[in-house]
Length: 302
Image (cartoon, rainbow, N blue to C red; front, side, top):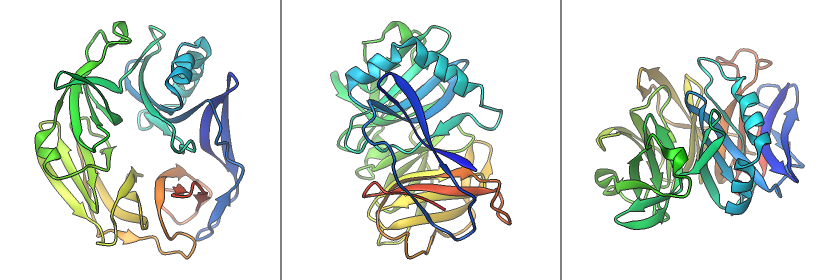
């Protein structure tokens, strides 16, 4: 079974690194030889409209713009979009380029154009935001100080390639403290998750808190949250946690208390983790494995 780990562009070529194995339940596989010196690394491709994509990537601004202006990039993106289904609207990959700038490109296949959404007008100043989420016609991101801001995706965004969009502070959310990360809620374009220390909050686009879930006090930071329809995976500074969930229209609810994935090889900090389709794992529903990256950039699959 092949699982895509990283997807990147190097020397003008697009490459995907995959991990081949026939897994067994309980076995932890450490993956070696991952490319870390790509020109541009892709973190995710998300379909947000008709032939409109949100592309998360890493690299210098010059390299990212060079890729987004390359006709072969749009051919590659069209190939990826052909793998999407009614239930699969995005593809995720591990980001192995630690310490490099992260970028969020809104890309139109029809127009063959793009807009880097990381620079916005905030309080009359040009401000950089990261960790951007796109929810319908809204976008949310975090400043370097961990404060959330929200704006509207303007219809002529592709015509304003170098013009920052307008954004405003999410005051009620920012009152809770420094936000570590933002994450999507499955099946929802009206709510999102905000992780602050050991708490995961769910907010709607009006800035109203819907619910929250608290992890163990040993958790100081939640770096990533992923879902597989019946469980969520939380990558933290102190291991990987899972929570049973129930997905409902426009929301998700916890159906169990958070539990640590207890394994001697899975201790310490994890910067990212997501579920991967794994039909060879029997007795598990849905049939999915986990691909995760430690704080020291080691990759593990189980």
